[in-house]
Image (cartoon, rainbow, N blue to C red; front, top):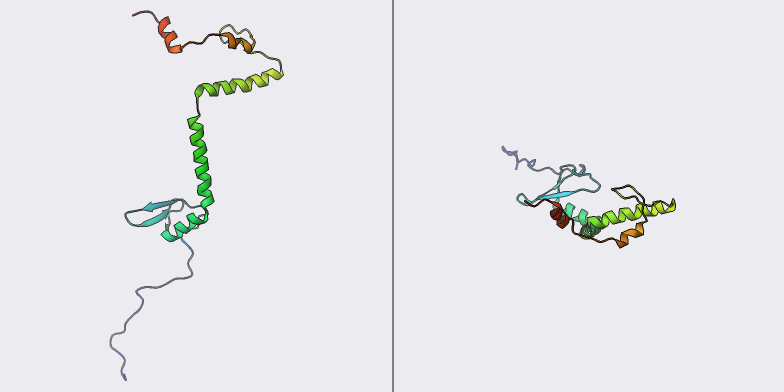
Length: 139
């Protein structure tokens, strides 16, 4: 080997850079999985995230997912228990409690005269759709 080779082999096909920061610096990232290309993206900053890093982040912050799940379950419970009539009654109750401190009575929406709220316990109830049909002229 007295002579240098004519063809020099280069090793610059791949370089490793250890000094760079992670592309995604988000504190609470929201991930999107590209199943076709097997990639994970950060929805907040748009960076490509290593799938193992995304999985590790999710595992480290399981409390956030648990809190979101609890919040969704509470919303589901509220929606399941939502009844428009009850909302009106709750609002009337709030108004009555405020008015009771000042010794106020509600007024009739038609004649505008005050009446004791207890009188509502003695009224009859009817189906409003049926009442409308009964009042409508026969065609």
